[in-house]
Image 1 (cartoon, rainbow, N blue to C red):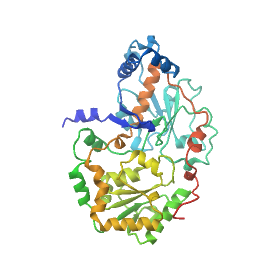
Image 2 (cartoon, rainbow, N blue to C red; image 1 turned 30 degrees about the vertical axis):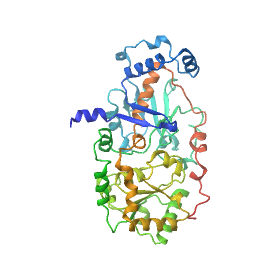
Image 3 (cartoon, helix red, strand yellow; image 1 turned 120 degrees about the horizontal axis):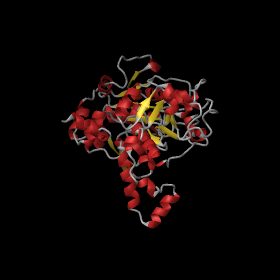
Image 4 (tube, helix red, strand yellow; image 1 turned 60 degrees about the vertical axis):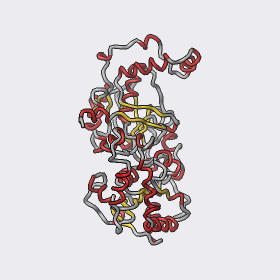
Length: 419
């Protein structure tokens, strides 16, 4: 297969049901001139009344702007990353490679004042010595809050510097973010297998292969290294203890169990190890935090070929992004004992267990298109702003959105059948 073709197609994703609007789009990292063509097409297909309502909504583009500008004279948007290279999955060099010539990124502090957007991570926003703002913030400079952590982690932090009229956009795992950035659901090879309709991720052969890897000795795997500090980490361990007390056989690894493994948790070796287990306890460090579904579900379980047993995200949030029949949710059981008994039943009934793989027999629908395309989306939004100057937003109270609009149980658990 032509490798250049694969890398061209890697940025093309179909995002269905994006931001819970029930709308299907085709989304890609578009060239700037494609944004111009799309805008012309949208307005050209409207009748006069639709154009009026479109203009009232702030979306009408003056005729003068429909004249194609000389894009060679427009500098690509510059994104300043406050977190530098501290996150290996989303480091500066990887992002720069992904965005190509369409947008540029920098971690050079000297370039902060010249950037079109500041991507401000949670550590920079809330540490006692926060990042230094540009001297005289440009009125058209977008401040983007970037996080992959649940809000309970920062509920006691000082919001005074970033709360009022500070952030313009949010880029998080929450579906109501301006830029949806979920935990990665698939790596590039998996994503391409779906796009090109090859059979490395779904199909009867894939199902048979994944089922054949199961070991009679390996029933349940649980890997936890964050043990205390808040209700979420404490209560998930209580649930694990209750399952074990009910007689469930499990392999426990991680700091919380004083059982360390040398494999990196996002490595191929770890996925091959996990593939021998029938179930993985995808227990998050936050309970009912909105849309908080991490690599425990995506990578440790589904990608490895195990069935995730989910504690953390609410069932409606899980249903919104995961294929039906691909997981088990603790909220469906009256007690840890009942869940343990059901897992042991599935261990003894191969036919019933295999039903959790039926969803893999056909190409995935919308669920797996919700990929980590956040940086491509950010780049597109910045080009929209450059071309039309019609993108304006500010969070009058960021704390209200980040803390106030999440579920109370994310911060304090007051009930549960394991307590």
